Image (cartoon, rainbow, N blue to C red; front, side, top):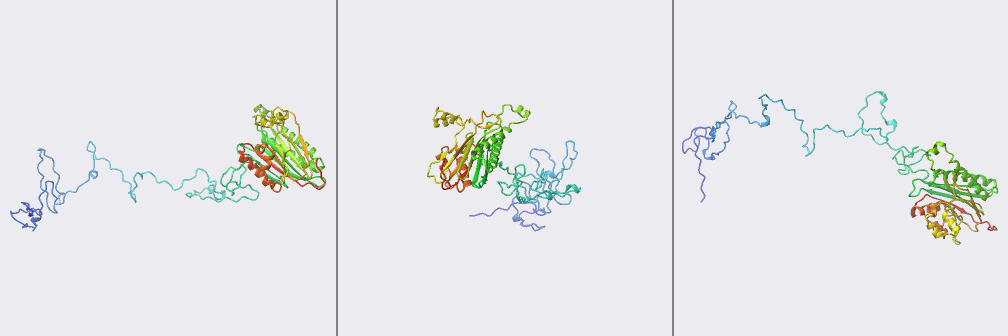
Length: 469
């Protein structure tokens, strides 16, 4: 059976400290219910409102420890203080200086690892230099002497549209290209003017490309149309290849192509025979390249071991019934019939070590061109050329076709006439610029180890009754 809990014996009322008699169930002074009095704990009891705390028992070790005050003198318990709230003293008993004021509590609880004792950082940092996107009219006028207001975040101004005739950036297609070759909108460096060149002049078209391995384009070309004294049209194409081992090969090829092209377009209308005009054009080109070697003595002293500027040249003149070619060096001319019914042909012979070996019967063509010396040229335009020997030849094709005038940057990937014909589109006579682009792409697809330049000159249909030479 269950047992009722025994009542604890008490001698004073827990509420008012009135002495009690044995067996009292209620206090006679305040009416406190003595049956609800719990057993007295061993630790310090909780003090009731208006009551007193009994004196502590003496320390078991006999030490007379000082006792704290029971009340503040007004009947209220002494307030409890935390250790940090009590004034501190130094070793001599002097009070310590007050601690610095604590910073205001943040509005939100700080995240772990975040410090708030550093100064507030601005949302926008001022630029160390003027923003190039801002126009001069939008800049603050500091010369007025007024204190400028706090700068707001600059907004990017839209790029001004290029004016008519200005170069347009090849990257963003929106900004104007400045004199230094950079886009004013996106800052992209523009390709050099000669890195890729295309030109059409009547039915003649030419394309030149830097290639995939060279750092610059050392080729150059000149194309044009004119008329003979009888009014018949005459089309001209000149292609030059700068000799990379020489000084300023790009300048040499440009000077030679311009000089030869200008002479042809001037001499043909005067009645000069096309073959003679081609010979004179090569001589004019040679003089132009030689003039580049006439440098000040100080320039020669700074580079005494440099070769004079040099290049090769190949050209073609096409009239109603005559095809004239001329060359010095290893650039070539090919003939490709429009109907492909007859085989194509190469119309020039290289001024090269390999060609000399084959002509002398010392090596076969395959053996000669497999040698590492194959492309060493034996003829060129330049002040240090051994002997200038212009080559010219004339042909009278019996059918329409296309004349291909090119540097070795192309024919290295289509060496034989059959390979050149296979690489050229069938509609090259009607679309010469497209055909030239395709041939340049053929060389780039093959590796593009050299500069690539090609000019296409359509040969017209032979008039009735014309023969062939």
